Length: 511
Image 1 (tube, rainbow, N blue to C red):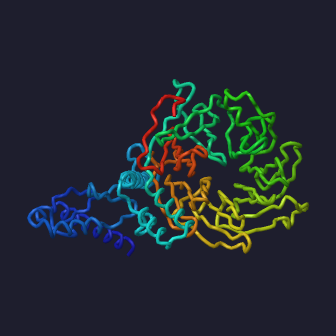
Image 2 (image 1 turned 120 degrees about the vertical axis):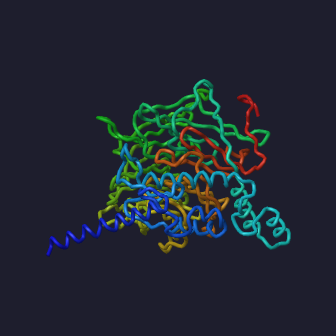
Image 3 (image 1 turned 135 degrees about the vertical axis):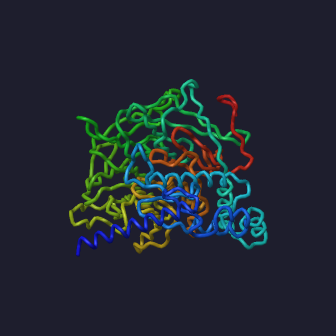
């Protein structure tokens, strides 16, 4: 019985396969993995004589192409292609490659739309003239007017490429930007670049606005090179505001990890007044760092390690160690009190009050605890210090009320799967910014979570080309210009508020 069943199965298969081939040949097609419009609508010859009906039929046929496991249907070539689980030199068509191709087509399309002069307003009926009219009529408070004007301005920003001026004009930047971090006044931006032969180089860029309403960028003379990778960086106020830079460096070979405190003036030859503090603290590999600005913990910084938090006095070297139970990936100090907020790989967010003495294993010293759904990559405390923004590796961005330990708002659209991506908060302008793993820069209204704008990257998306951004209404200091600064690979871009912005092409030192 079993043999007869197998025999009938083979005959049945060969009979129907031959019949399928005959039908395919009769439609004028070779017996490949192709989807013939004749099986779902009129033939191509009929389409020429009856264009209106057949255009719709052809469209329906394309969308109705059945999904076959292990195959991909290309509507342009009107045929199926076999998918392989991995890369193959003979047939390199994989699902990952197809997804990358579709994402790149989408990015190129959005890039063209983004440069269009008549873009869609961030909110229905929102424009500068209407806002001004409502303000004159007393229908709009001053605070709401300023916030909505910023929304209109960021929706109209256009991309301009910046040329970085340097004392050595013959040595342009040939290394990819890995990170850019602005100081509190946005006058200086600390840069981290990956060096091609390994390691990193660090420098500081100075910004200033010019008379014609353009922005100039100048790289400081000295660059700091190291063969060790950097995991975290923040500005530190030792002798004055943002006088130093705090760096967490990974150990290499027999050299342990460390945290280095470097004076910002170290990067410039033109300033002979060097601050006296240039020191390094031996600390095993740290994921994060933060500097405390509260007077009760003057010249104190923290480092987040694997299952530990270390709080260090930069002058005396005295340390306090807290056992956390999870890797601490992000940190920020409060300003009004010496309280440190931490985000962990486990999704836990907790605070430490440095005035408390207890550091037992029962974690009773954690003054506040709540949880995200995945590893927390960034925490940002709002000015009133009652609310905290947190982002995780599931792409969730939430606003937490610290007092009741409850999420009160969520910002949709962010994309992340495993990357360490920071949040950028511009509270005075009412804006929240984040760059996703898909390389799109998104701006939300901090007040209601509305997605104002999505900016595509000028470069094709990739793991090594995620943009780094800085946003400020005074980029370059008090006399600076408002806009967004974006570093992608080895290029620097500026998105200004001013629609009439023109690139600064004057000689060095000229305003």
